[in-house]
Amino acid sequence: ASQVCFSRELWDEIPLSKWETSSTTVAPTLSQNLSTSSPSNIVTQSPSKHPSIAPVTGNPSSTALPSAISNLSKQPSVSPTKTVTTKAPSPQPSMATITVNPTKQSSSSLAPSPRSPEPTKQQSASPTSDVTNDSLSYMAPTVSVEESKPYPYGLPINPASISIPEKRFIEWTKLDDWERTFAGKDYLGYDEATWTVPGSNDVEEWSYSDLYEDEKAGAEGLEINEDMWDCHINHYFGFWWEDLVERGFDQYFTVLGWDLESWDNEATIPETEEMSWDELSPEQQAAASQVCFSMELWDEEPLSGLGSA
Image (cartoon, rainbow, N blue to C red; front, side, top):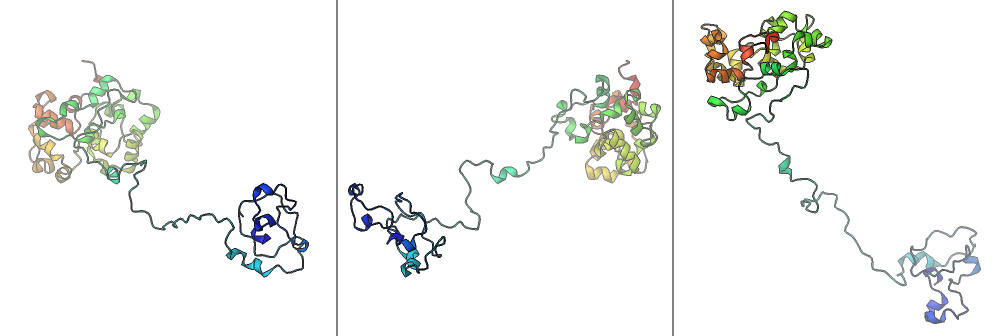
C-alpha cells in the first residue's frame, strides 16, 4: 500500500483535521529492509510518475520486493486525473485554407501580371552619369513618351527606344580612361573622329549578334546591352527584313518607305534616306523615333556641335 502512496491516515480515512494531532507520520511505512533513503515528509497530492518496475538500487535489501509491485503500473491511481487524449497529428498536410491572420495573399496573386503594352518606366529626366542636358536631347527620341500615349498613327512603342546608352553620347574628351579604352581600337575601334559623328564607324553597321567577342566586351564596358546596341547604335540596319517582321520592327520601316525588296536587295532606296529630319512627315518622325533616331542622329550632327546653334 505504501508503494501506491497510502499512509496509515489515508488507509484508515482519518480526516485531515486530525492528522496534526496524530503521532503517526504521513510518510509511507516501509520495512527497514525496503527503505532506500530517508523518506520525504512532504505530502504529494498525486504521484507524478508511476513507480519504476526496475529493482531498487542504492543499498537495496536482499529481500525480494512484493510481487504486487510488479503490477503497480496496472493499478488505478488513488486520485485519478482526467487524461485528455489528443489526436495524433496527421502526416498529411491539411487541405483547408488557413484563414487566421494570413501573412500572404492567395496563390492567385503570385501569378505574373499581364505585360503592359506600354513601357512601365518613364525616361529619366536627369542623367545618371556626366551627361549634359544638350546630350540628353541628342539621345532621346524626338517624340516623348508622354506624347506617345497612345502613340501617334497607331504605331506601338518600341521599349528599346526608351533605354538610352548614355555613355555613347558623351563627348570623347569627357570619357574616362576606361571608357575610352572600351571604345577604342582594342575593342570597338572608335577614335575621336568616329566617336564624335555617330554612324561613321563601320562597327555600327553590324547587329549585336554579329559583333566579335571583343567588340561585345567593349559594348558591355560602356554599359550598352544588346537591345540598346541594335536600336540606338545600329538602328536595326544589320537585320534582314524577315528578322524585322519577326520582331515587329518592319512596321516602322514601312512608314519610312522600306519594303522587302528595297531592304534586302537595295532595289530602290526610299526617298526618306535623302531627307532631313524636318523634311520627314510627323508620321515618319514618329516611326524613326521608334528605331532610336533623334533629329540629331538622323541628320548626322556631331556630338561636339550640340548646343552650338
